[in-house]
Amino acid sequence: MIKVGIVGGTGYTGVELLRLLAVHPDVQLTAITSRKEDGLPVADMFPSLRGRVNLAFSAPDNVDLTKCDVVFFATPHGVAMAQAPALLAAGVKVIDLAADFRIKDKDVFEKWYKIPHTCPELLDEAVYGLVELNREQIKGARLIANPGCYPTTMQLGFYPLLKAKLIDTTSLIADSKSGVSGAGRKAEIGTLFSEASDNFKAYGVSGHRHTPETSAQLQRYTDSPVSLVFTPHLVPMIRGMHSTLYARLTSDIANEDLQALFEKEYAGSAFVDVMPFGSHPETRSTRGSNMLRLALHRPGNGNMLVILVVQDNLVKGASGQAVQCMNLMFGLDETTGLQQIALLP
Image (cartoon, rainbow, N blue to C red; front, side, top):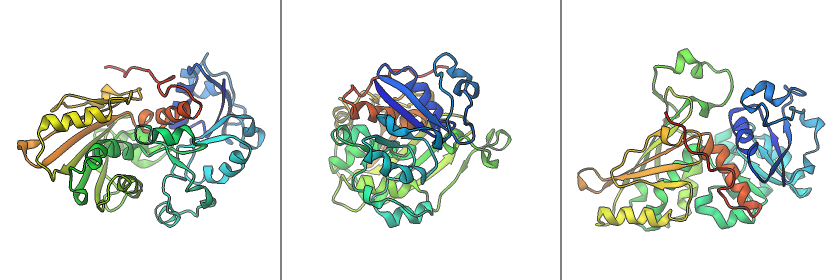
């Protein structure tokens, strides 16, 4: 059994990890930390876990995480970088769901996250945990930078086109929407029910932290310079993410060949569903699951390709993806414990 510790178990990604790992056949939940909730039974805070998780929260100072095989950090930015070096030195594998190791350039990280990076020596070692694109590297990794939710949709949508050199890399556009759970489990005016309900708005238009992360990853797959315009929006739902991606074709290619390109690329990816050409994937078709669904459109049969991508921002966009990485790191099938079917209605 894989002994698992979770640092920061009280947020949405933390409880999502608990939901997934509590029924994982190869996992033993060993420690769940929360300084504020020290001693509180996990099931008292999250009744959905009654009978499944019998641990109590522990203050970080009261638990020895070096007894774990892997530790997930479901914490604010900056926490994992402070604790990862000691855990790695003790032979513990680390999966960070925050952004501490996503951006390789220390200066770029500090510019966007406004905090100093305290262990830049680990940036080169950290493996970016997007399984569909980095499967082999993840298998041998001891430190995983779990991708951002929006970047997951953008990269999986654009990647086959970049790889095949079919699009203008200088004019990529991503128009993305997320439910309010993406903002985390905290009291903020913008995510209060009376503020977010019956409302729709863009944010981060002049610059968002996920832009440099996504651009740097996309740049790995092309020799041409990547220019990405990314606009996120907040929609009045709890879970779900929808990205509408725009890419200008530079080659004369038939629609059926575009479809075949995506189907072939993701044929071996259990959690990417390439729907029939012209489909309209819905966020509810992924709710509670680790599935990402996408579909291609070509308005007027012109040179602009539209890729629609949906996922659950807390599962494939966060905790499910982290568990997918853990499975590979420990020699398991990547689908283990992640076969939940989306909830309908």
